[in-house]
Image (cartoon, rainbow, N blue to C red; front, side, top):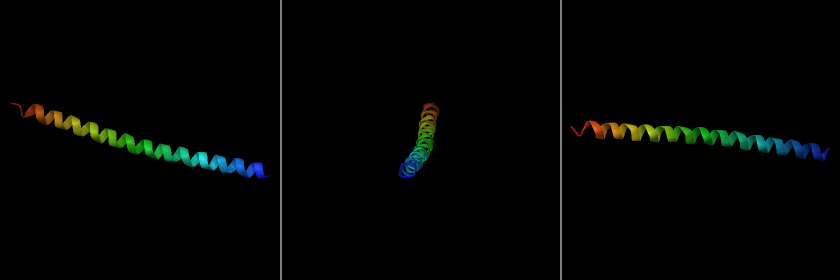
Length: 51
């Protein structure tokens, strides 16, 4: 009985960690996309103002 409760608790904690990692991965991916878009726009702006 105790082993079952401990095993279930371990599964719950692992599930929470996985959900947290997915949440962080989505945030990091969004920030990287935002940063890359900003760099691309900056390059485009510097190229067009050279003329």
